Length: 124
Image (cartoon, rainbow, N blue to C red; front, side, top):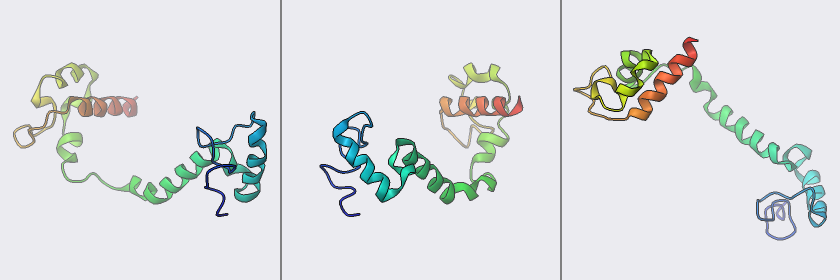
């Protein structure tokens, strides 16, 4: 297993980090990978699946969490995100950024526009 991540004739050598199934010189390396780490993780999508699974395993429990800190003013009470017609206003008005613009002097129109788009996608 120590040769698995080494340079040269190994599973992850080459410009992209993955062997090409069309390259005859890499075919032996691909077969070696399949024997060492299994057929799923020798393919390109296997590594992505592993990263997704580990990420979900670590962060999945946070999907049930409530809003925290300033989310109440930026998301829950922000009336400007309730309609897509307010998106142009988000790019020039501080009042469209949160429900408490005096307390949060932040101008982040892209963030607020994304909140509006997310609200619209969930409402429909």
